[in-house]
Image 1 (cartoon, helix red, strand yellow):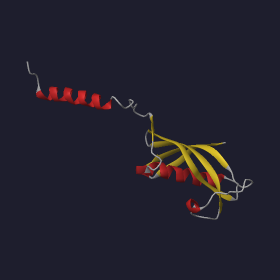
Image 2 (tube, one colour):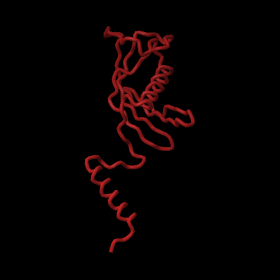
Image 3 (cartoon, one colour):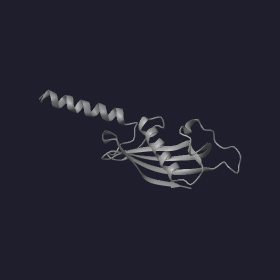
Image 4 (cartoon, rainbow, N blue to C red):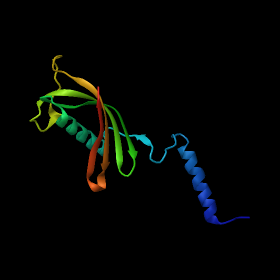
Length: 137
């Protein structure tokens, strides 16, 4: 009793897929997953979050990301990035345009490091991006 050949191939493919995936945790559709810090989408979300942070700040100096503590993403009707970062005050004033080249303040009275949680929502195919959450402490 041989059955349909395609049925045997499908069963074999399922068994092989299950064997290969046994070392990885199962992924839920729409669930949060870790994202690499150097991922282009993560970098775009970080730049946008920091731009919005600096716009809303009353500080005369610009701030930038000192360290990415955790980056996660969630596929929804676009992509939500959940970013947990350490932010530091730089020596550049708000009139500066390229904050990545700015050094962090080294004097204790001017140095300021805080931890921020940002949620950035992006729909790349519509060129849409927004900051949904900005919590710093």
